[in-house]
Length: 155
Image 1 (tube, rainbow, N blue to C red):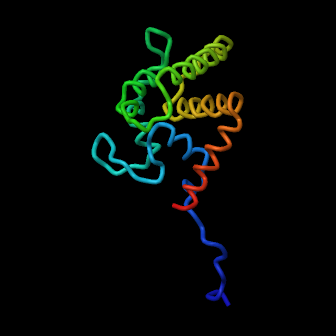
Image 2 (cartoon, rainbow, N blue to C red):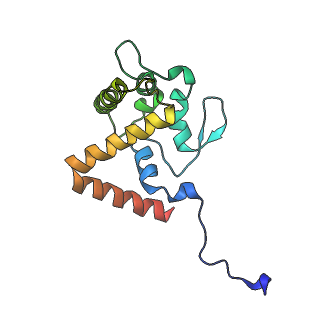
Image 3 (cartoon, one colour):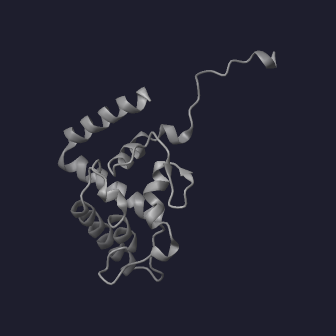
């Protein structure tokens, strides 16, 4: 009977399955388990709150110091005035320098240089953060992820 089919286990929204992504967002002092107001006053998810200061297409490309304009806007945003941000501006600069170095190396061999979109740059930043913690403090990374997973699952 078509009406008697079991739906199986309870399904969850895709964004609620992205534990690593949510943990990375939490490092910026944003609670990934709540909603925020955007600069325009709309209710938005934490990723979009993180992206708010950098999503303007005019932020694409490098500034006069050969740093991504995204980096400059992000570190000058109010996120870094938040007492619960686990990342320092100095750490973000190191990650940005790595991203820049790799981008320039890739672009040397390209006819049309890569110009990252804000979400691509944030993905690169997330990868830098994860790799730094993986190679420099694997046990700390595991502990932090397990703590976050417990909180995430309770939510």
